[in-house]
Amino acid sequence: MIPKLLSILFGTISTMIIGFYWYSVIFRDRYMKEANVKLEKEKENNQQNNQPLFLELAGRLLQACLITIFYNILKLKDERDLILALSLAVFFCISFQVQYYTSKVVWEYKTWNYFVIKMCEQFISFSTLSIIAYIFVK
Image (tube, rainbow, N blue to C red):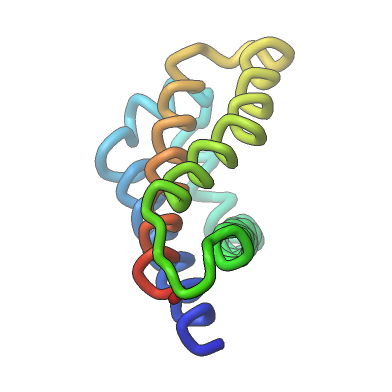
């Protein structure tokens, strides 16, 4: 039980860190342009409430729980399987995220650059969660 909780905890923290660096350091200007976010408006909204941060944390926690639980259920007894872990990352990314961000491009007129930025971050996050589950869950 403790290894699973550690997997969830470290997975949530690591994906929050990845998301922070991805959107604030690596692709900040590009993402702000593609998502049509005005910096002054964003600062004003962030100072008023922390609800988006808590929702993001809850989403990352849910992702970590799902990857850890599915990895624990699907792996063979007392064996660790890196291929299974990474397959879960690909499955979650393709089955949920591709459909979601493709609909943003089609219906909300976001650009394909927005799609690529979001999908790469999601794939890296899911891969990180899978590797952490592989390390901790025995």
